[in-house]
Length: 108
Ligand code: SF4
Image (tube, rainbow, N blue to C red; front, side, top):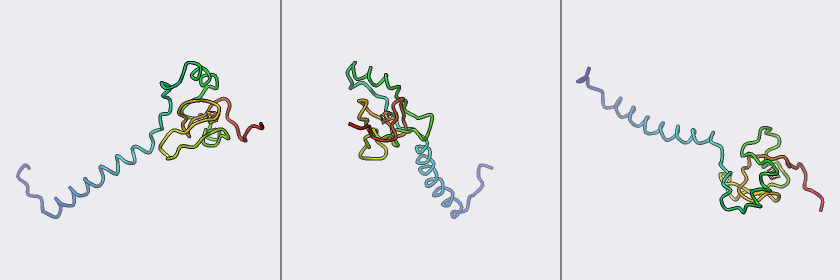
């Protein structure tokens, strides 16, 4: 019915509720998004070749072998930023991995 009157209280509750729920839904939607640390445009050809040689992937297939658990991972200043790696140049995701994952630091 187009001319049906909506009580003021019901109207306010529905609009305030929608204004609260929409931003919260957007925030939660971002939680499942993986950090993209695949931009190698700043690297030299040699650095890209070295990175490809270790078969870096942005998301680890095995959660136990994630970069953030690797002895060679260099943590980013903030949780939502790419870190680094002492073995490969360029951005490295904490959720990433590679063929050279190391549980302990190599002996020098
Ligand atoms: S060695 Fe591999 S697993 Fe370890 S931090 Fe570097 S890219 Fe990630």
